[in-house]
Image (tube, rainbow, N blue to C red; front, side, top):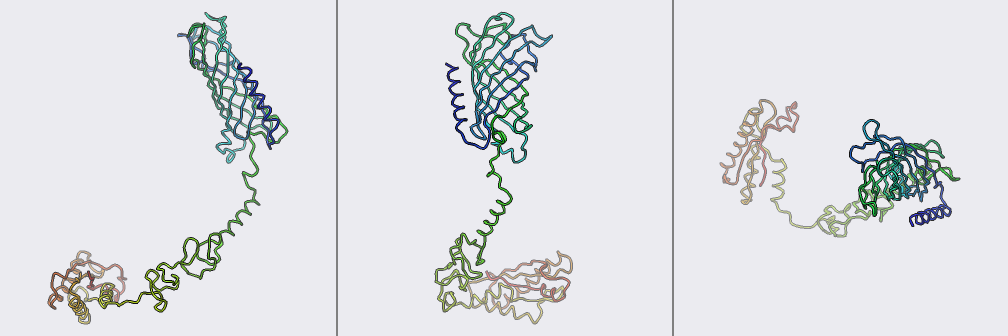
Length: 424
């Protein structure tokens, strides 16, 4: 039954190969030879060499495409004892397996860095026989089934030949006799079910590629996978055309639904002119783009502007300051009017409060300048209180040196020696 199934699968593969139209060869013949190593079961006291020269296998492989295929292979050889370390034994074996094959080199795109080295993976199942030639079971042929898995490295010698190196592990099932033939591991009448036999092979060999095409699937690279220089140049040109932005709004033409928006216009992700406040005036013409207003007022709302806003703006933005002479906390006469300005503002707006901020230039020790800046702020604080402002509406603090001005310039240093205000 097993032979019928294997024959049917192989015939199907042959039929597929005959009808397939591809640009690469699919068939190859594999010839390998090398070492084996039985791991278990071995009768206690029996040992085998780590590398026992005594294995060969032959196979025929068919690739469905560049990445996956199947192969039928026949392996045979013999196990023997480790000289001087084990009682003698000699066991012949063979196996016949149908395996799936994966072209791991193509799957992992090894062609991007090498065209001469490749890696295959294989896994499958089959039948076999273990036949001890010595010891208790020297006349017993142990029929087994098996599973096999391994990796095959390839070095391309030509379009027709590749050097290979393979490592495979085989698991025998229904094995009843140890590899040395000296003991049984299950009843001989019905076998021991389970994959209890473990061994591996390591081989070197050759792959011979068959077919009329220039290359085999192991090494084939589809022409369209890697573009030519001319194709790349064409594609780059097309991309550049797509990325053109004719109206300069930051949206490429192929995405722009208003390809003729004016320069500096604010647009959305589709290149359409924005009207953020919905007043009918596009943002680039709207003086107040986030507050609706009529066109007669350039898109800004018409509303009463309170006087407090102008005074507060002037104070907070540093237009109102009290200045001092070098190393002095007494306000210069010409700047005393700033104190009156703030006092009048506070009297007209009893709900607001003010912080007085003192500063010094960068000449002198830093800790000294910190104390000097605080004295300057305190002097203005006292002047405001004496003008009738409640102390609860006032605070003062020294901020030390003003490093934002050029300390090499006498005029700049004069601007640094000041007290400014912040409306709370």
